[in-house]
Length: 263
Image 1 (cartoon, helix red, strand yellow):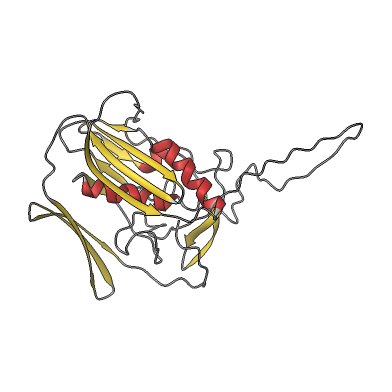
Image 2: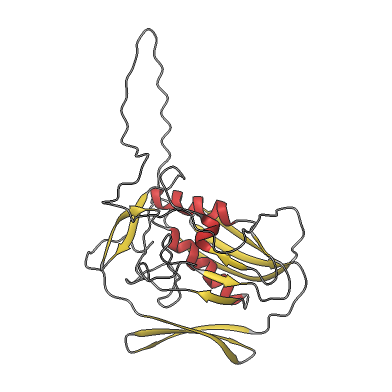
């Protein structure tokens, strides 16, 4: 688990357009150039260390039966923002059908992996300091925040979560979970008493995370509430009327006026 708050402060988002160009020529040799990067530009992206495995790897299982839905949460994104959409799709492809055995821990960074150009990620808005800048993998934090909200509603044990440093818009303030490679992770432990599987999809501007259980279990009457106390947002989870999780968030206003909010 890589916990630091370099991205309670990271909130990037953008997409990547798939360009399909077909050039036909007869008796001519055509030379084209491209601006597509194949390595990281550290002046516009965050430094990324080597992959770190902090927990036993989780595996996918699309065949076994997980018939009991524990929770579902949806957020929405602009499909016209193609680079951000591409980044969301990349992360979703790593998360969909992941199984978290009973007692095991889910690590977002370990499961999704390093966000690089060669892994298909593109530049979109991310949080750096007190402004939104172009950075590799923008949009990923909307995925982690959506998973966070689904995990909350499934009454799973949230072990690592941090907010962005700047205000975001795809979940209520106080309800986000930011991530940054080898710096800030989002993690939860499956304390449900049964194996669970995540269904994570992104289609037509809707990002959905659902959590299903192998066995029929009672997670109780789960309620999530976010309140504001001065400049601080307080998220609480109550189960059967008893508080079993609280987390706190503070945000700054972005220095820029960009409309692209958060990773």
